[in-house]
Image (cartoon, rainbow, N blue to C red; front, side):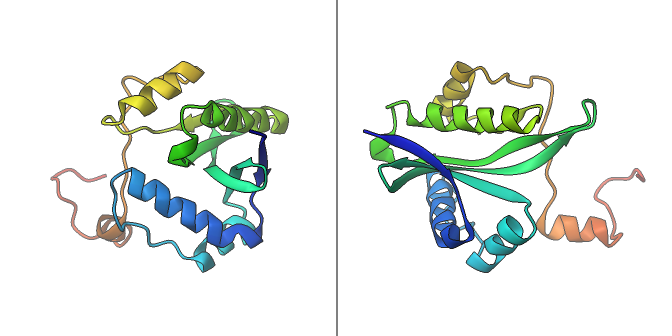
Length: 167
């Protein structure tokens, strides 16, 4: 097997969406993807807010990682956040995922950026083991918070908060 890597181009927008849907299905988030080719094209290739890197067996895309850009205030430099990471089932357990994440790490260093971060669901013990094996550190004592959808809209528009304290 000859594994290579390449960054996605605008022509890969449909393929990116296909892999996002596969990742969604793997994560048991059936039918939560609302991304479209148009939205991906805008935010990836017009606005530069995200990027995707494919793993290839020959010229066949067999996996991908989708990263967005974050920033370290303490170090004053950018970082990469792994939003989605997916390897086709028949290619798992062969070191391809590790090689793909290694390529992300190399890209981070080549750019002079400071870190690669990701989240892993607690239920996915294999994922936790994989990231720990690669040297990722669990950020014990940190909790991921998220606000989106109706709650985001309510907060942005000053609607009543669900608790008694003011911000």
